[in-house]
Length: 130
Image (cartoon, rainbow, N blue to C red; front, side, top):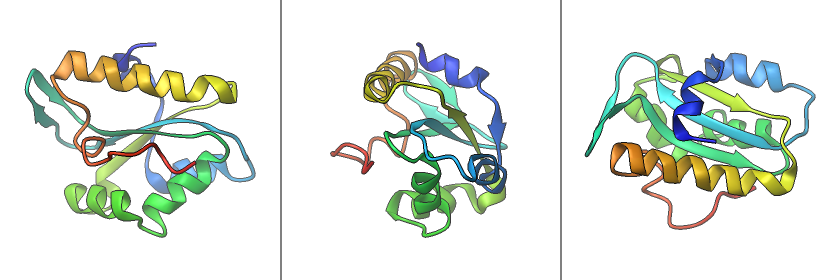
């Protein structure tokens, strides 16, 4: 899987993403992008500002970002100006053991293509919470 693959995912606003995940307790991957602009990276521009995962419950992870407003969520919302300024791409139906490896691949491919990790992945020195 390559980072540009997240460009082909279906994208939703935060409320719609949470609504579509209602009642599901499954892990998966997600990309968060700015809706109306791109970020300048060393080798080009991309609207993607974060790539993340949840091994067990992707809905809870997204709620932590955009309802409870954890640190990453706060920073992303500040960057976007509001929830309406972002879109979320979601990839489900993965085996739990595949999720960390696919996330690493997405981040690695993004870094090769754009010259750095997505803006808010750079802030993290530790693995995702779930």
